[in-house]
Length: 560
Image 1 (cartoon, one colour):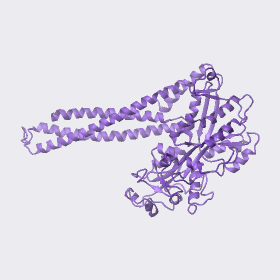
Image 2: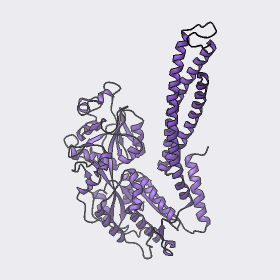
Image 3: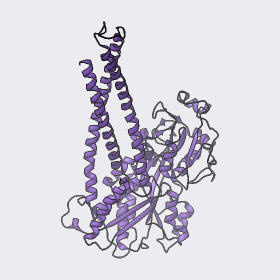
């Protein structure tokens, strides 16, 4: 059977082959690397540019972590020539790296930070049965600090129970161990969380290199301490090990149905990142933060942690794109122009709307204005084209080679987009069928109760033959009722088992597809919906068929 990755790759291959057959001479590329947090947002926007361009374009982004993105952008071991066309991170470029890049005149000289999105970082857990939201787990930064350095190693520790008195009722045992999951290989999430701990609880989390940064000195791996690579790895660490606590960007964690810990913010409000977002508490972190006046300045001292405000989320990260002021080191003038077009896309309201599904909030208008001005001032080679964007029909000009047009679509993109309506219809049908299954379950339950009552009455009669005095039922009819009862019970069990199996199959297929995603093959929410819908519909069809057969048999025997 062809894998999801294989089928999707085959479709893309056909589309690309079609493009080249039409006589295009050159493929122009743009390639970035860095933080995993905005990767899905980047991939969607890159695909849009490819689909809407008349020129054959290839845009790619390697989700390898902020530290790697900074390293590849700086190119310190490459005579400060960057390995990527742009870098990205949820932390600013460190001061020493910033100074080294700016001192190198051969590869672009000054660098720019383009802040384009704000996102929440959250703490998640996997204690069985504990709900999310109000009534779930909540903590202060000082409690988290003690857990992270292993001074608290059991969930029923008195300090945790003091703020979560009902937690004891959920724990499987006394001294239920806390598993600690942390990122490896340099992570902006680690940098944000550890900086937050020292800002909000300095007595419990010192401000030193062992405790604060993208890589720190964690307790040794093993003995309930897990090392996790990337956002996907952190998800697996938390989800697959009950009793684990870890950290990840909120949008990713919620999309994986992880259970969030509510945090106390600087104003003493205990809330979740979802509650904060609904109350504009992500953007408010930027409102209370002083930013450099120019994007060519250093952002090394900027953070959005533990800021004031009733509903402000305490761990907010800004996602930056790193670009050289002079990009003439990129050989192709067309690719220079493409980089500027990519940057403008990040500040386009319609384009950014596709990123909000991942929990991102757009940068404040004042930052967006500075960014667009800075993009205009990026130095390019003579003859580098300025890409433009066609949002409504512009006859003649819209057909230009350097126009990104919403009116232009690839066959692959069109086919994928047409699935959205079908997926919605399937999901609606699935909901209707699930209601039918629930109705059948109630009917089966009622029939089972009636069968039991009839059987009890029959049991008061004569088993030697003929009919029972109380019901007029023969022994053969009573035996048939017994068999029916058993079949009804089996049906109930199968209905429950199908739900468990669908969930398991969905998890396996989704994990496999997302593994493809981590290997560089895009896996979007559309594909996830398709997989889930297909699995659910198949399972429901089987259940309904079995329920209908047994239901008809029950009615025949009972004379209903």
